[in-house]
Image (cartoon, rainbow, N blue to C red; front, top):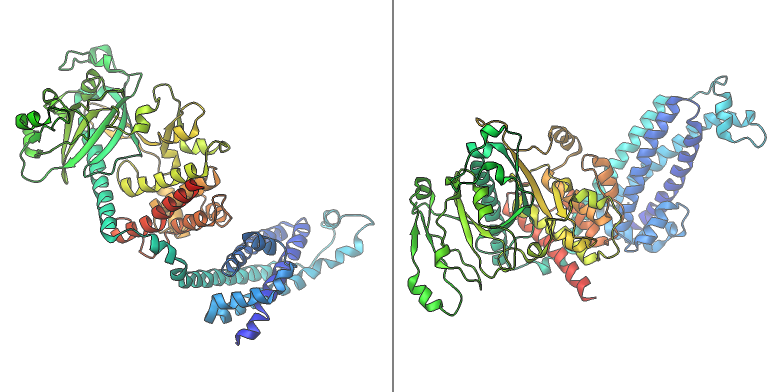
Length: 605
């Protein structure tokens, strides 16, 4: 079919179909009172109508940049723009060789709708019995029990099925055309992509962060599986803001609560404290540095140099501390913990294997691990893990210059603990700027890259797994305390420490297969971006509702809207395996850099 003839038909036919759809919708809304069969037909028909409206919306976007105009056209099939030759030419240009297939689909839809309109003439007999000034709906209710109308439900079921097939074809064609056009649309994104060497460094850092954070989780499980720890319940808050460095550095808030236990079961820790005294009302804040150890097995730790005026003298006195613990000997390594611009006294060199203590929370408490304005970074002790890879996790007192400054300044002792999805359930504060909203989205994307596939952030995660500490009425400051919360419990002394389950994922696994979710972790990230963009909680299990919301315009703009859709569909052209560097590169280039660019441009305004 020639492009000229196509341009004379595609747009007017689509607009006419929208008008006819609206007319049928109105009639079925009235006639549904006749019987349950008619009402079921109406529901099925209305769904196909909505799908068609959405697809027409997407098609118009390929040719129009004016979102307001697109909405007006979809809402009004009689809009004058449906007869615009300029728009017709733009559609044909966008679809190119696919214009013929588009024409056939819209013609099929028009034919089916015409058949439905003719079939609904069976209800025209109601006009003959309609009373003066009586609503047609009331007429249907009045005569439905004594008037037989030849309504053939099987025909309507077939037409609904045909409309469904046409909508699916239109959806597939539109997505293919969009994908074919995407390389031209993505040139700006490619221009912003980082240097390949920097990109490899970033993905390497994310890989190391995942390994180290999982090793830290395993170390905590092992440390809290001792008999003395059996009578305590532990809660750990892993803050999402981390430092990008050669070592993985995270900030934790640990609380230790005594489980129900008889007084006779209380034991005394090596430092003479009764276990019952470890019940904490305030959380302990610690800074943890996790560093991989090589396979040499030398359990040694180099003491870091001072950074004060006696630096030269300190360098001469630098010594190596040997650990006598067998487990540390097998898993150790030469490690140099560098504390930038902070003093570390030689007398405070790390000599304590926290695993060797019966309950290392007592050691943290005795060392006063509470955030304070302290110019000295003191290493309290370490935990080693030797499962798949060997790591040493060194615990430092939380002080300025060591832990995250936002965490150091935050008041988590008196601030209420709130789930992120509960925050979204309340109207967005006017004080929360758009850059802060985008910064929140960026923070969560980076957290997924760093902690996905670990025990901290499982495949079926959601915003309900993220928490923050309220900082008065300052929502921006509260969001800086965003963290993952995990509870540890031990049911009996003979059992290993277990992490409380976040819920059964089997139901979502079935839903994932039915709706074609390519990657649950990335899909849930898309749901989080959608919720942040609309500042409203979103149920990730209601996939139809999620996709319907994602098809609507976003208050944060078209770029954010497009990013959200790409993440929901895992549409990066690099498969669906998040462990592959290619997909990580695509997410970093297409989402992280894009968000950073948006934040920078808005911050300059």
